[in-house]
Image (cartoon, rainbow, N blue to C red; front, top):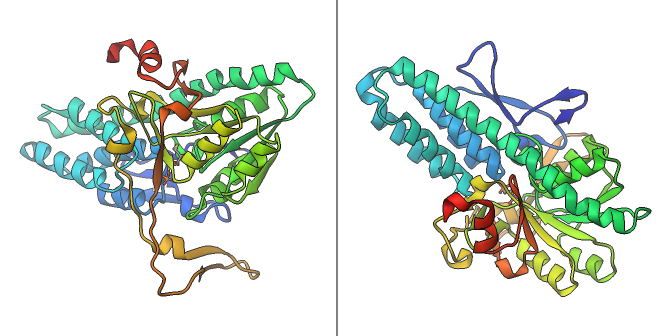
Length: 369
Ligand code: MRU
């Protein structure tokens, strides 16, 4: 997608030196656009853990490039399996909820297994990581095309009306390699000239909505308003939300959707107000082994300091972090929650839209029966 007039992806290999992977460092957005160079898999693991890069699809691609970077430092053919496994373990240990991370790393390991020549290993690892990144972008582009149909239907019912869409967290292009999931249909509809306004949940405690989704939408000229996380229910009661679209970090084969903490409450409010609630996700986010999201999806617990402190720009343009609460009050920081399938109107995937249940999902992915 575009930043100013220039097209970017969130992760790419330096064309003049393939030993360097570039990422947009999301910790500095929306105030600064900073690109970081990553030279090894340990730094990639740190970048995922500390959320320089974040979002389900992007951490999948970052994991794949992490394995590629690890392959560059393997000097002897007999070290290949052990070094790759060590790198995989480190990368996978960074964040537990988004299944795209382990999906991408396992895919790399599976396809690299048995390679005994280090030059062949590097070439193949590069090819595979690039494939995973390209595939992520392509899946997201297709999610945009399928999701567009839902927005078009709403538009056709009342062509004069601006369509109000509520989203939570950031499932835009910054959370993937390109295009995004929840925001991809919104970008596609905006390009088609459908009038849209997006309600952007700020998404405490890390504020991915206020800092990343708002920045993306502003860069693309899409009307939006940032709202405090607790506002959605009120807006829904007053007919100010036509649909909700969120992303997902892991979805079970039965359609339970894990997404950023707070999503479940939005789904409950949408259900109570008969407002369509869609989750947009590529098939790399579906965990085909799980059936009960509430019991089985691991929920990341992050540092409580993220709840207790908040960062932003002060008047002189410097960034500052301040304490929000009594210093000694304990805090708890769950990163995700699970919305049960019964509250999800539909799932928008790269293959089409389906019901949020096993039959619906398997109709689109019959090879998983
Ligand atoms: O903790 P994050 O920012 O990595 O959270 C992941 C997300 O971006 C959201 O949960 C998003 O809505 C899911 S789609 C990437």
